[in-house]
Length: 363
Image 1 (tube, helix red, strand yellow):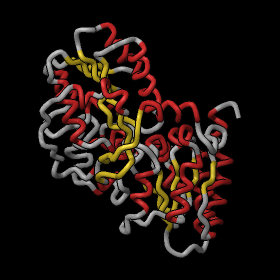
Image 2 (cartoon, rainbow, N blue to C red; image 1 turned 90 degrees about the vertical axis):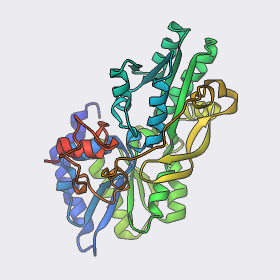
Image 3 (cartoon, rainbow, N blue to C red; image 1 turned 135 degrees about the vertical axis):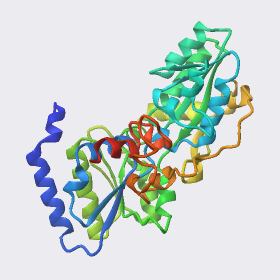
Image 4 (spheres, rainbow, N blue to C red; image 1 turned 45 degrees about the vertical axis):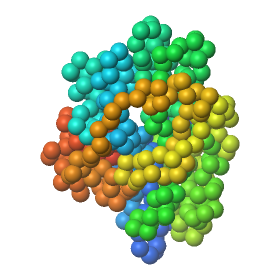
């Protein structure tokens, strides 16, 4: 296929929906399928996919938005660094508006802090080279999709001999949170639409241990409407048949082994570590930190600051939304105190957040 419109053909969509209805006809109860990709979240809401599915299928959003799962303590440390004299904070745009315990990077920028939006980690490296008297801290937030580019920025900073470039790491990895959610007896997920961008790096085979341990179906899925519908079709077929395996709907991009060059880059610069996920807690070996050889670029080690005690907004239910246990409309703050213009929770900040998607497309 050459054009994106081919992945939005209404006649093909109707055929897929009819097939899904046939597959689940007579299925007792309701199956819960979870997507763990922010782009999936937006596509599902934008194209009204939930309304197209039969009543036997419940489609929920999980922790697939990297900004949303970043804990409040990380934001507080970034704010503390922004207040540090002679420091430039460089970040992708969404992070600026995420509320910390008592402030945000956007609020600090308004007070005079040097906080800049960049479009690539290499832009932050260039900032460090142009401002040798200042310390440049790049906010390393994201899954395996963006982490290789951050690894590349560290290697480039080393190559240029820069001693004023640092990364504040909050990198997360899949499928560790999927295992944590599968083990939650209150949730009872029956199958996963596995993330597309992440899977292009880690490969479809990365989900096999999850299938082996929990006997849960996994389908790597693209994010065009027909991709999502076909992914649901493939998952429903497995659930109804009582099967559990990894299938790859997105084979035009994702390979079983993934991107070996990107994986090698990650392995060279980063090592696994325990990581805190908003709403879920600490998941062992679900994060990435700089290896000791790259400690000179570690902002947390090299630029110590006093960080306030992390405190979540008492009414925010982002954690339960990220686990798929409630929908945004179940939160009392949604569309009242919490809006995209004045977000209280991270899920309303990011363009990939479930609350932001519900607000924009949920009717």
